[in-house]
Image (cartoon, rainbow, N blue to C red):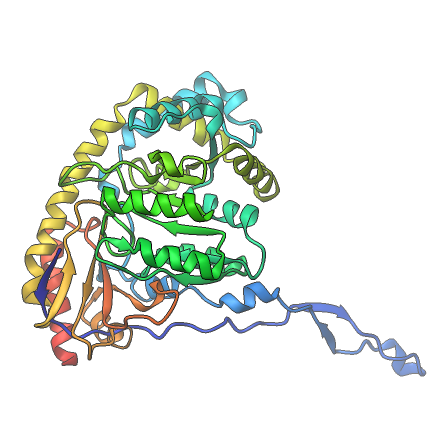
Length: 438
């Protein structure tokens, strides 16, 4: 759903490849030709260059933008950070105390790559309760769901393989697939997400390995794919042979409407869908706990990749999370957080019409952390960002979220980190910055 509003846009230019600084190498000695031979040559050889896959990726636009907006006086709508005052600090601290006092030898020891059995059992029970029958053996615990994406890229992608994504798409997924050397192709879509007919046409033409999607409260748009669209995507995957990677970090943060079943629960998709989950948005991102649910062969391949990456996710964090699930009511905590976030979303929606330029439009997310705005076509939110930051407020320009030609009039706003009062002030500053650029 969209609403009208106005405002120009600005942003920091997308960084190019990072300049390489030669590391010191071994000294090169001058030929022995008399007394001068005892004086070492001051020259040194350059170290070998970085891998081509790293050089081709360059910098991180979001990292660079956040560095610009890190000043405490900046009201930062650019980040994707949960509100720290809402963390259940006492419950999490109690869970860590318990495992360190009661099972210190286990908590501080190496663990299995697949993850602590007690945590996988509790995650499986939560997944099953939400409509997708799951056992502990179906799950691999990861160091955040971002690692799950990296493991899947390692297990599935060879350089030159094609990956299909949404337009726009979660930026860090684009970075993972790019680092793997994949060709990234955006699937045309609409307000409901990727178009199934366009997907089928692309699968036939491009022979991709996978489709990556965040179907619930998507980052960056906040949109949710309807049940019929999910079923259609699953059907395409079944008919044409395609992995679906369904990323669900925000799904529990619902403020309006009814829950929509996972794509992974659709009969056509059960043998070809990888479901990713995370505690980052519902417990705490610093714990760095995520998981993937995948068919046996792919899950085992990801476990091999994880052994090479970090052996296993920190044991103490896994056991503390398992203890938290046993001793605390995570669902009640999430409900409290969602109630606060709903107020903050509503505060941002209430102020956008007066903030953005006439002719703008934006999403009204039913949950999650973000909304997406499109300014009139003449605005370039990347070019406008420095002038907006000068007003001590920040957003993320939309251009880096596109695999293909970007819509430079778009921007992402995060509404969960600030209070309604701070949001109102931030929107006033944003409005001033956009007016100055008109």
